[in-house]
Length: 417
Picture (cartoon, rainbow, N blue to C red):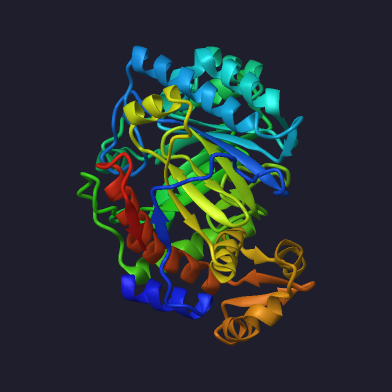
């Protein structure tokens, strides 16, 4: 896998230079110059730990959570205070972990954000199904949350059992969502589980829209090496057939495809913290992407709190992009939306897309991966699958290695990818 990602990266960046992450960071982050800037806040606490989940998380403890939130508020103000006035940002997303475990302090966090940033496109928050209760939802809405994403994984008892999750009560969710409404109600599902069929996944999607979702996300199962999961991945041909069939089904139902994995029943229902040109991340493991650098915070809650107490940013690692590296990163995550707009690329980099990657675009069209519509490159079904296939390689060659190290070392000296 690493050979494929290495060869592709070398060709696209026109360099053998690796992505090198070092134990360093800027005291003052140059985000003031960034347009289309988003925000992300990580709450790493969970009521129970799922074996298959690769994200930074720890068992919930009220005292530890409060100490963490206190440090988080300081980090937000440390970074936000670097910009004179209030910086306009597109969106704010809360992930985890289970952010609802900090529901009583969510308003404080959003107030701290609002001291330094003006949010134009709403606030999203991830929820465990157990948190979808009217009292909790009202707290979220009162704090300013406009979008929620519920991690269902599957309504099927069989697949919940495979994943080590408790059963979900669809009717309880429907009643709670009917009582407290949000602009976007997204539900997450895992696809490509062992033995999963089109009928299984279709039933999950139909049920989601029936009980109140206006947006669904179907993420492929990825077997990270550092998790305790024993679940096996689905073979490539079966996975492609399943993705193609569910995509065609959603198109036939009139659902809008806004990213590789997401479909919505309403045009304005959107939920994605990834399709943003630049973003600032706050909290453990949160990442920050700026014009010329990418940084990632420590995964350790204790180290995070100690670093903030010293009035230092909790950055663990930083990479400085070459121009070509930044272009590849931009294209990879922009393509997640299934489209690449040459005009947007040129605005961002000041150079035409065809000048930098004309051959690659021609070759992608030749292979049937993309087609041009109104001057925008759009993925075909074939292209969407192979994007997923390459993302799987990228995840296991790069993210799996980095996260595996950072789970055990709060501040590694260097990681080369």
